[in-house]
Length: 352
Image 1 (cartoon, helix red, strand yellow):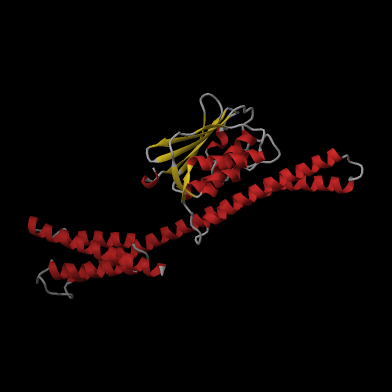
Image 2: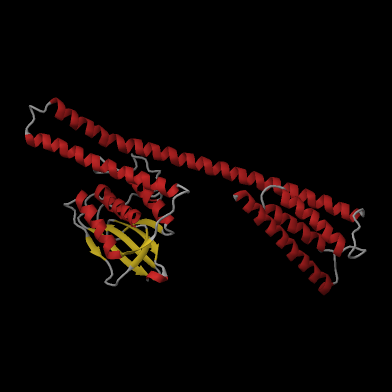
């Protein structure tokens, strides 16, 4: 079906281009009383058709139709075909050469772009696998060590020690679940069969849901909330946007060394909503700032202050989700110290 749509689109473009050029040539002939530029204009049309359409078919078709148009309307005897004249044969050969050469060039360029895109995709997969392998190994090793200690020394360990080891297992398990949720979100968005389920969501309800989930994971970390007093309804996928906010807040917990204040701020900007997460920690290293949302951060590049870190994966997931919503996401260092992560979502007029 897609192939037929492309063929129909290319055919419409070819016919439209030739009709426009035919009309332009008629105007030139009537106004300036000259026909010297007419073949060159049709050659330009053949070039455009060959450049914009796929394969060779429409370029060659455009060259044949152009030859017939020049021969019929702009060559003596007018409005009659004289296909054996030298001018007609020469024009046909030149336009065919232009069509074939342009088609070959564009086909080669498209093939190179496809190979480049596939190579980039493979590189992204390799980086994701490396990041996942490294980030999963630490909590799995901790879980294995804690459970082994409980099994082997259950009778000799005190109740408090057993509870401490089991608590560590619980925390690592929760972190692994969060990591799997991130990976499943990317898979869901990348799937061509699944689309985002945008529904109007009240801003206060979204923030409340995020805070409840965040405080379950980090009950000791306080957050300053700054949101407008107005009633705001935003069209979005609530599960995915909650995941974005939780990833950014969690990123501050792991990487903002020396942080004493964490702020979640929401602002209205024309027809957009701006979400910002601000901290007063150590800021973002210039070495990794440009690749924060690419998923290409090596573990050695990421400044960590804990045993678990998913900066590369978590922020890459955030970027994927926000782009799927039609928004943009960025990060910068604050002048007063610390970092600011922010993203925008479109606020439709119907929900404004």
